[in-house]
Length: 147
Image (cartoon, rainbow, N blue to C red; front, side):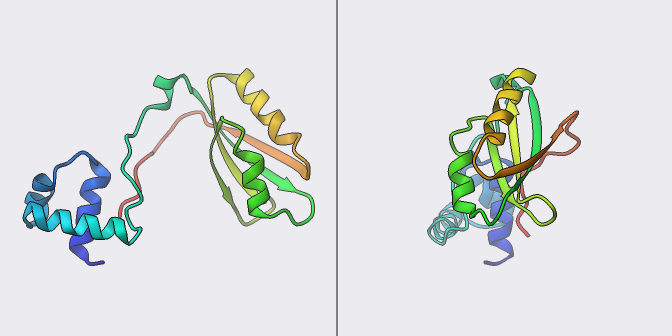
């Protein structure tokens, strides 16, 4: 991967609907050359998909929280993923260093829905402790820029 590939990915990160011609004008390549590079980046697994960024509030998900979950014993990441997948309010989960084992990102319509989701997390076998943080405001939310 070279600097042109990174520049192409930056363009796609800002607007995945950009045409190869538009990207080519920015990076100094022809549309077919940009397409070849994008195809290669997809084949190599660097670009994993194209998606729309949607305001969660417009979908009724106004409340956002992060929950640190600590499990008893040695619980595998695969088992944790199986526990979390059915909880539709969970939008992301990460294994983390520190006291907690997992940091769970939730979005809910309101406090009642959040509380129900939190109870489902707490009731899973092996959960020793949860610690929740409600998001008051978003200061920065941007796509990951290529390095």
